[in-house]
Length: 573
Image (cartoon, rainbow, N blue to C red):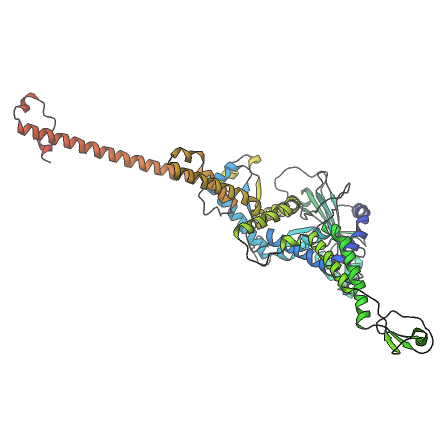
């Protein structure tokens, strides 16, 4: 059954009403913190190519927010290092070398797909919106168009939807699972993509004004009553998430599609008391200080102009009104004022030193709001211990917000979506038998993050393992008591350390391989020992026989009283 555009647009109006209380505040924050994000109230239509910094006199907040966004992307998800890996939730399956190698191969191919896509240009926009407004730009994830005939997978395409163009809703678990995205397309592109369903007005515009913009509403929402089966779903109406393309101005449905996974993960920085759907970010905390600093700089600039080019008093024998403008000339009664010389500047008594001190204080507060102190490396060279403590401090301050909510609401869904897209597209190798034969509840695959921030969280375990091993070996060297070494499972210590240090699985042998090698080595040792025992027994028998022969030759009578143990032919050998 085709979707009803009237009902979809009715839901859109409801989402507009829910978002409306946030819009005015977002616009106010954007005016002083991130002017290029302005236009939330007007969707940017009235701001095309215009100056956006009307209300901004100081860029401290903008630079601090951009620096934090760059730090988050650079230390968590940049494509210049392997920032994640995969592992099975059932730890026992990871003991199989085939399983660990397959997961590492999948992770490497996924990382390559991220690197070849536009991920590094779109992800920072999502981080920036999340920092400033508390709600990130929904990251629309889809497969790119196939360019080569016969190619199964076209690559990845990411679109960070501007927050002003997105209306969201969340499920009962308070996770965003609905996005209404209002965008524009040239009329000629609308007709090219939907030649049969485009409205007549748009078709006519494609002929007369092909580059005139047409509003297109993209809707992604859960499909109520979709089958719960995880099997193949070849039809759009069977997929868990519905996707509709509409011309809202013409109330026309262009296309209905479907997704196996929610394609637009949208994280929040934090939540306000009693508020749902939309979050609140660091821009909320820094806004009063940024606004105050902008006003202070504005007044200082006004006073600076007056000081550099002050208004003048000129004696003309009669009084006049004063214009407080740089370079203005005022006619006054100089005789009554005792003016000498007859032309003098008006000194306004502005104290620029006080203003500059207060501005620096406010800049420090703003930078602290965006954790700039943690991101700035000291000028002097740090020791290894100082560097480690600094990383630990970053992790403690940024870890709960950055690695916590971002992991569950943004990074995990993004990687899961990419994994599923590539697996269905044949871009990943087939899973090994160990996973296929495992029960369904044990096949779940989890993400392991390997960026600097995630590594800092795991470094404490690595340091603890190293410290304990060093202490144990030191005690053994002093006491020479082998029982001391029994307190540590060195196999588990090495595997745990390799996992904490993000060592590639290709470097480490799997537990099954280690067990097989040890079994082979034990059998080889046993066989060598058996051969050695047989050789030693044969040597002993030969020595005994030779000794008896010598005794017999020394006392010939002994041969008559005893049974000869070794044939003479053998004795001669």
